[in-house]
Image (cartoon, rainbow, N blue to C red):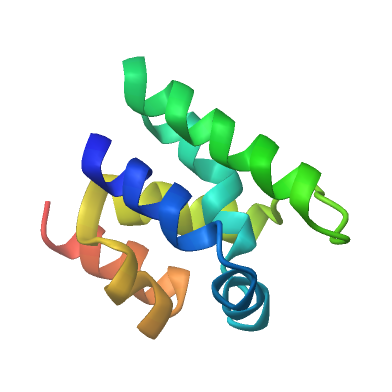
Length: 99
């Protein structure tokens, strides 16, 4: 996780990479990172959100409830790739059927 957070800081320090983050509608997931990490990774994630706030013209808003749910499902169940490909109800149904 530490490597992931450091990599995101480096990647997003380039303006064109940040524009891709916005275009692909992934900003909400970056904002959720501090909530799903702890220790030094959480601190790095908070620094990343602060860096985004300071370096962009984008207004940082709380993530939508849907994206907060997706972030939680991704962390606890299946990872971000699957969450981005499927709807939350599908994933929750799959999770409940696998209990």
